[in-house]
Amino acid sequence: MLFQIDFKAGKPVYLQLVDQVRHAAASGMLRAGEPLPGIRPLAEELRINRNTIAKAYAELESQGTIETVPGKGCFLKANNSPFTKVVRDKLLEKEIDGAVVTAHHLQIGHEAFLEMVKERLDYFERKSAASNDESSPKTTPRRKE
Amino acid sequence: MKESQPAIEIRDLTRRYGKLEAVHGLSLTVRAGCCYGFFGRNGAGKTTTIKCLLNLLRPQTGSVRVFGLDPQRDEVAVKSRLAYVPDAVAFYPWMTVRDTLEYFASFRAHWNRDIENDLVKRFGLDRNQKAASMSKGQKTQLALITAICPEPELLVLDEPTSGLDPIVRREFIETVIGAYQSSDPANRTVFVSTHLISEFEGLIDEFTVIEQGRNLLTMNADDARERFKKISVRFSAEPAKLVLPGALQIKQTGREAEILANGNSEKLMAELQSQNPEELRCESLSLEEIFVASKVLTQSAK
Image: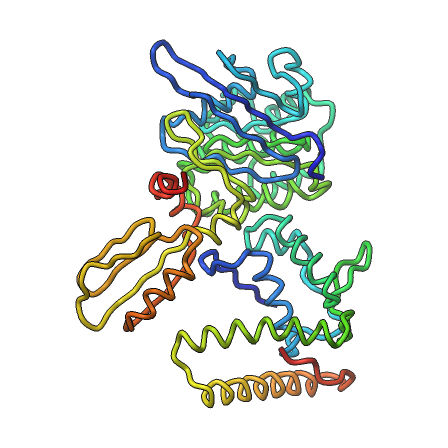
């Protein structure tokens, strides 16, 4: 799994890692039950603090994306969010609001925006389906973000 | 973890050399388990401060505490819990790598042989080579091994990577991240003074910029990158002089301008957007850029 850290993104490094794991999960790059990189090798490779990675994994665990097996490491969980539907909607709404604001600043209109959302949904669905075909088709399509 | 004893606590430290005031009223606190950057230009007072931590110099006023202890009174207790890699490493020239490691291990209550073997192999050092014939990079690698094998709670690094080639520098940092913090990371504190900031960017949790012996800026690294931003804007026609209340600095050249923002980048972005620019971008300042601009940044923060 490839991580890309950008110190200029204005987003805390641990949140960049969180986003990238969630992205990998949504696009099927990482499947349920598969391990995440160990903290030490990943820290050395990215040359970032171990605390940062530990913080990212803790965040992912609290979101229900991954689980820690003591002595074995962290693994991607099957897709069952610990949050209620109302909370999930609220969380997604916040993210959508962010994209809407960005679209406004970039002068991307209503129709074009919806078109792009649809295109991205299709993209993730296709990628996820493709990666499921490669192995045993055991998992259901994932929640899109 | 927050209530636990800080690894380092410096209060109003002052140290003069004759008339020259190297450190003037410096205060800072380093939490245990954190990686702390200590940035400053040459002659800013970094090494003087570090020498006070190690009781190589005595503070003239103010206090220095390491693990809550006074390095002057409890020198042995403090030194047995920390390790230090200076900028210029000196070993006894007649000793081989093997002798040097034995010599250093003899002062320590605890010495991790596995780490020693691992790192000697990783750095490709020859145990029979004498220190006299070692390169600067090899000496620094050897110094790092002698600092990490005792698995100290605090690792003090003073300009550790200056003068090293990029590959050795990379290995050095990977070793600090990997080998040093491999067990019990909550009790592994790193205090690193450097002006090669970009290399340590990912490692630093918190930092202090010291200037003329004073603490100019202390911040959490993520907070700093979130707060200080650089906005680049380009207009289709040369605009009148940009007026942006709240901007830290505006550099305007022709159709383009670069604006420094201090926590108000969204407001400034909205304002610029309303002037219909051709291009508008916003990115965080890196720690190095924050260090370079720290004077400007702190002027308006007050």
